[in-house]
Image (cartoon, helix red, strand yellow):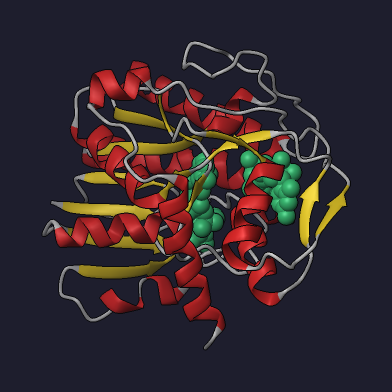
Length: 309
Ligand code: NAD
Ligand code: UDP
């Protein structure tokens, strides 16, 4: 098949492309390199089944493809808050453009939504039926509301134009190729431990997250794309940790003598997050297989290699 991956030079997109090319597909990687890195896809640049397109999804594009994985959007709070209006445009205009493309060429499109659509959730763990608790004018809103309207657009194109959609709600995902300056918690804590800089814990560290290793997530995306269930479906690892537990785990794994420092909790930081993955299990026969300790080992090794260069 000929498959378009928007945001393909980013963290998740580049791992997805590795799998798609290994399966023998032809892959078009579209990216504006805002948070993507050519290094993530450099190993495919001369491969006959790979094509790189520098393009911004906020502008329309004409291509002939059979499937679209629409991942283009900065995912780290640091990056999506840097230019919040652009983040909204990327989610809204970008998703309209990709749905329009899918409609024109009759491609199936999978949109990468997020656990952030649940906001600061009052239902725990989060099921797909929960409508969420999102502040519509806070510093996270450009991302949260952008992804909520992206979901709305998918379902309206499905109802109005029978576009063949799939909607994945991705929970915190980590692994090799996260940027050194990504700003998300796993990469921050690993880079700080390796550089012997105090580990930054925001707030008292009692807020929770559930961390999914990237290969598990990619498997879930591929199953969703190629199955009959359109979603929305939660994809994440139900193993839930406080941020303080995570910091101590990374500290003891890499650098037991490094200190922890407490910094202010950012506005609207969700207090708890854990996916209910019953639907993924039922409809995709999917569940994560990589334990946090194993995944952290692989991620730490990747950062060690990159930081030593
Ligand atoms: P990432 O920042 O590494 O990748 C995003 C990619 O999109 C980058 O390569 C970036 O350059 C590209 N991009 C951004 N704006 C663009 C635009 N206007 N036009 C073209 N390309 C653009 O992030 P990621 O972690 O790989 O996330 C990928 C997708 O998954 C995002 O849509 C994100 O919202 C979603 N997601 C990720 C997580 C996670 O924990 N990693 C959780 C929930 C949802
Ligand atoms: N966090 C932290 N230290 C950091 C970066 C993040 O304590 O250096 C916290 C952050 O406040 C949040 C959690 O870790 O409670 C996850 O943050 P991240 O930015 O990775 O993802 P998100 O908040 O979008 O789930």
